[in-house]
Length: 129
View 1 (cartoon, rainbow, N blue to C red):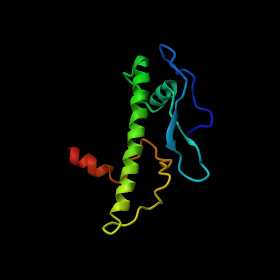
View 2 (cartoon, one colour):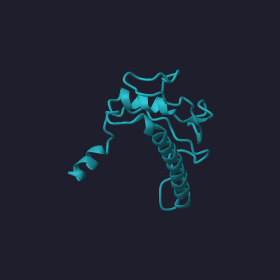
View 3 (cartoon, rainbow, N blue to C red):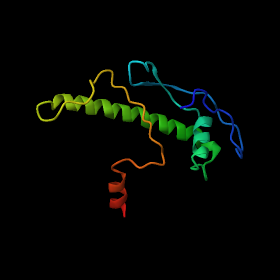
View 4 (tube, rainbow, N blue to C red):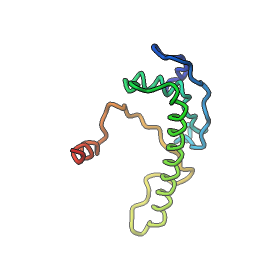
């Protein structure tokens, strides 16, 4: 993520969007990272969709709801991850230990481009056909 987030309205945007960001309760991974994540503002989210060419048909009026849904999904995903790590601990006799200690359950920063397929993606694409 850039040091200075893009909060400037993009070309062709019909109305201004809020630029306020909401702090998360999800801790950042790594001892050097510290702190918690900060969710994107509706303007940042809209700019990201436009930059990636995925903003066709997206209405500015809907962005606050989209960002809220994104933030809720991040929190529920983090809770699922905590539960999964707790389950690994209870199955330690049957399964290998988790790759990292379970405390404080940070979500790592993923440096994956949205245009690249993950290793298992071809399996999902093939099963959809």
